[in-house]
Image (cartoon, rainbow, N blue to C red):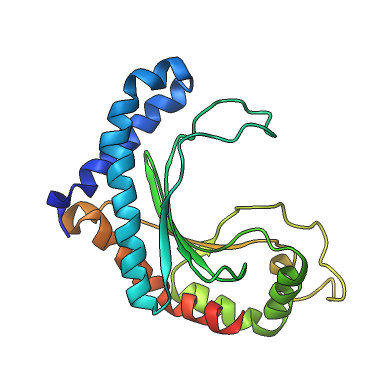
Length: 219
């Protein structure tokens, strides 16, 4: 892939557009610029998401579905009533809907670009499975995370204040046991301009693959 595929221009357009939208988050500003958003960001973004999911499916041997996140916010239960999201987010979700099946998630805003891997919002049986996994495989998880050059990201529900029962309050992985989500993040540089955005993201996917395989096999 190269810049001629259009994805480098797409992400430049998206970052610039969302910077302005963040400063003018209102329908009166967005509507006159909606056609630009649809043609230069949403449509190529949907194509990018589908290609990314297709390549991840091939690399992992597991079917994934690509999704470009909507620009429209759901404000029904939010104190923040601004109508639009101000970032470019794409996911490649495993078609296996097990809540502990890890998802790849690409995010770009002006000045920041990253690939994420993980799961959000454990509840019920999934939460119990996650805690048992941490109790058994916490040391190995840390080894895989370090090998991937990733760090933990803060997404999803807030962590508990205390280590949950029946685990010891001094458990060596107490901070992980408190979590209700497990998300890893790799920050991306700007070298995507040399190889193209899709290839740059897939290079990050490849770095994440041993960690992805470990999560898939052990969770």
